[in-house]
Image (cartoon, rainbow, N blue to C red):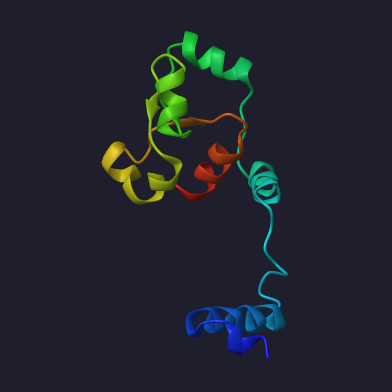
Length: 120
């Protein structure tokens, strides 16, 4: 038998995989593109022209870059603060004390910023 040639921990993993496949747990999993697209449809969106208007105007807002720190360090919009998308939900209240503050989020493709807008 094939099982006899496999060590005990590998056998357990193999059995778990068979169980997961039989329960079809991966059937409803979406790709990152599908998740991002769905978030973009729900989250409010501003164009780069609108952002330019915010930056040159007198309106007060907080500009958050939710890309990775490496992406932020490579270049970011002047005045933007970096805040990791994955930490936003947990620490947004520490970063922004005013619950009525206007927050503008951005990333490279709008996927992370849309997810952040929906979850923060």
